[in-house]
Image 1 (cartoon, protein in one colour):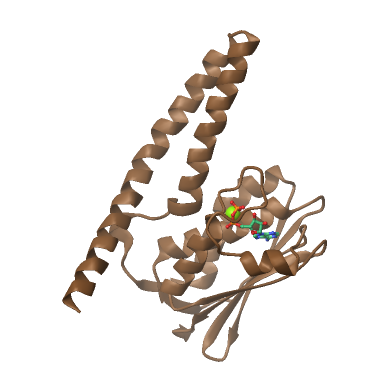
Image 2: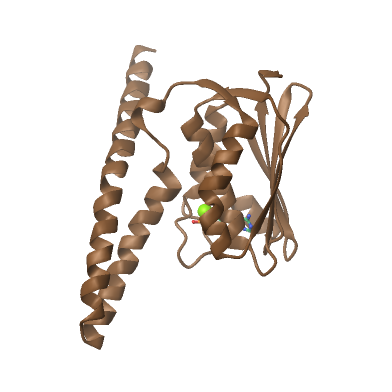
Length: 226
Ligand code: ADP
Ligand code: MG
């Protein structure tokens, strides 16, 4: 038992360390990207190709941080009460720029006063990953619905999109590390998301139909509703 405890402590230490490193690494990556773009604009075609490859690799590193550790802050392992409406509205604000680039609209319907317990950073990270996937799956006239309701002792949150959808084989592989159908995907987003929701005693389930869209259903134990 003692051995197990030590192992858990070590894991916690490593993941906290990873989170803080990710935060520190993000800024220099962005600065480097800016300079590469600047130099690239005044260089010949061969060099432009090389710069473009370098920038793609930097973007890949940034993507991994985004899927994994955007909101992971080492000091924020604390568990507090989370107001579903308030927190999901924040996530929507964060995701709005990305959504509008794809011409997507959000349709949000969230009741007041549904309270769960968990870590707000982890909560935001999980929903950011889900909404990012929805945005990336959209075609034209993209709509993303975000709603929540009380389901006896649970809160049911639904993230639905009218994007490309998935076939049963794809659905079965969700959450598997490195499973991605995107040319620039990390295949880490859902692995992290499943884990984060589990840590908060929640569950995540997908319904999807190829060509029609996808629904992510997330359930958390309800602490109280005001
Ligand atoms: P990534 O987004 O980097 O590909 P994820 O773990 O976030 O990795 O997602 C894994 C795969 O699951 C995606 O590549 C995609 O094929 C599929 N997927 C996830 N969410 C959706 C969605 N809303 N609509 C369609 N496909 C999805
Ligand atoms: Mg993703």
